Image (cartoon, rainbow, N blue to C red):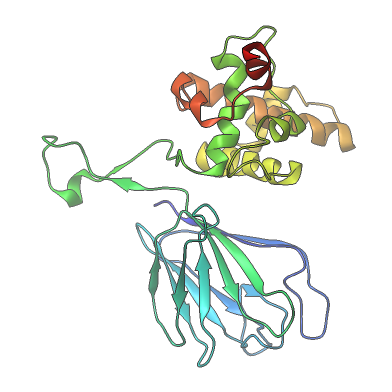
Length: 275
């Protein structure tokens, strides 16, 4: 595993008695640690969680070669680690538990508070390690293989990717990358993706581009021909360029194939022809 991404949403941070601050994103490699809690001048933390029910040093995240671990420093509070892609799947990390291994690719770490809503942050662990095929020879330590593009075909981000690639796979003409609103509409009625908002779809596209397919911002801008644009127009071009680059790479390396279209809900026009 090349590392993890930790994201604290806007409004969750801030100092005691102050409104939550802006969003925080950390990138951690193997062996690195990030601490979380209320923090203070004598107890520095990388993720500051603004709630009086949370300890100054509430816990820490540690990255290993093939997973990440969560330590709970609280003496009284149990933390939850939820799998947003797992239909309610979660695990508990009890008080004083050290180095609990977390198996999820997407995780939401939830800390209890005295308010109506709990405090949480997300952890993304993009890369997976696989054994070489039987007969490849060599020991496990010498033959560990990391896939070039490690995607979970049951995850919502992959569903979004399939929807983006659908026009090419169905050989429609003229071919254009679906817009974010078009992806939202295309997934409407899907069991897990039917409730996605435009913001959620954009977040999945960002995750695909930045973490799963590792398409740099400069490359995405070049794809869109964004040179010379400023302000809102440039931001729109970068967004379009990122979508174009994601689709181009996914199709070029057969990350998404025709059989993946079965993951999408039936098309409305197909139902109309059937009637």
